[in-house]
Length: 216
Image (cartoon, rainbow, N blue to C red):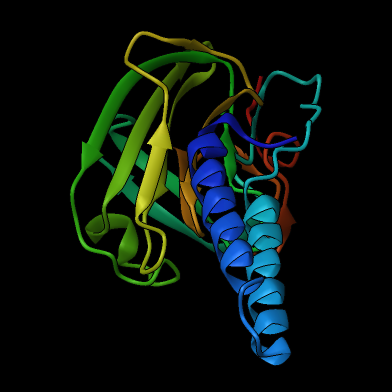
């Protein structure tokens, strides 16, 4: 299954690959012909792998925050969040490599009360300052347990952020909402009394891995 966010890109890539293979068939040199076909097909397969969109089963538990992205826990730190939560908070950052599934998912049930797209730089996503300086989209969810914020952060290579949310939307944990094309990171910020369930360098799965548990 492929994500709807990649249909246009995959279509363009398929056309380019078809044209390259068609052109290669007219070459007299078998070495160049084979090389072009192999490169074109490898590029197509890598693109199909990048835009894959497997089904996920969110936990039944409700007082939790799940990972919005596949990848590895890049950092965990305490922050002062002044945009939406407006209190001392804890941030977990997930780094997505080009080999990860790149479809992003809603981290908890609630209503989108804050949404902002910020034009910025394209520093390498693993740099700590990328959260504050890079191009990004920020989303604040208000739930019955409190407020949380999560951010799609563009990177040095990944410069295409896609989302289909708007303020006022009611959202469900684990549902798809967008993607960042070709790698980058997602930050999750919650009140600092929510219980952390992951550690640095843990590998997480979007829509399934529990990042935080909220005291009842």
